[in-house]
Image 1 (cartoon, rainbow over the protein chains, first blue to last red):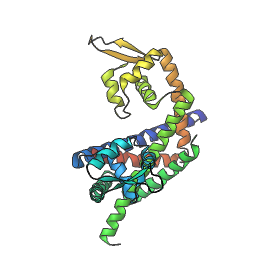
Image 2: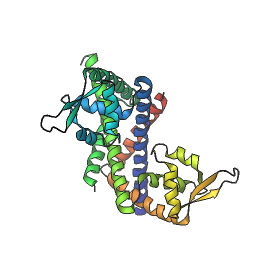
Image 3: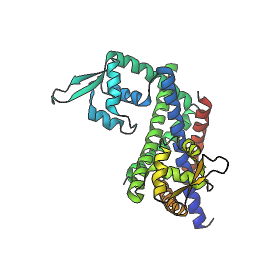
Image 4: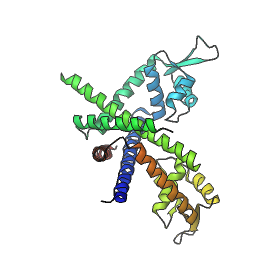
Length: 155
Length: 155
């Protein structure tokens, strides 16, 4: 194989891998969205926001929540307001800044999220069940290298 | 390891793998968006739409374009109109349906897309360069199994 052909083959291989990575992510995400809607009448941005709050029992400020959720693209106020109306989150005053407040899960919010998180984990286990334990570990390791390379390449 | 511990370990392994898959996809996509903006002053939905049209030289109907772009979530009319104003795509009447029309790349559009596609491919090769050829093939194969399992699990 001459150099140009080899290079083009490598190019296509990378592109094909990227498209498959994208497809897998989109398929799983779409399925998770559908199941969150069907089973819990909720959305992925709501689930993600509650998941963030779950990790910070003392609550998060609105701008911290925005930063965490940047990728999902959800509008934080538009998610927090209905959750508050449903009694799943509450706003508490921020001691160090009178104009600010924190958002945290209520007891009902923690209970609701725990149930969703359990189901979510079962779905992911099911959706990834095509791979053996060893293969899981293998993909995890190789994706770690992709993650690292991408972080280093960031412009 | 007792059965419950083993099961919980598998669960966490699947969840960790899913989060890493998501992170990799988001990192690469974010980098591609940033470079498309910096280098070509364009967006991912525009690039994706032109990429679809590239594969169909005879053009696509608006509803076909919508279906293709579902995942990106772009608003087709909102993307096509500016591209048409810039002379990169054109609308042509649909012979079999007088109310419909097709959208296709103009000669200038093909030229512009070819340049972007070449750069895009180079970026992907660069971002995935952390893996050897053999590892590329390995991840590709294992992701194929995940894709298959997800398609089968779809509710």
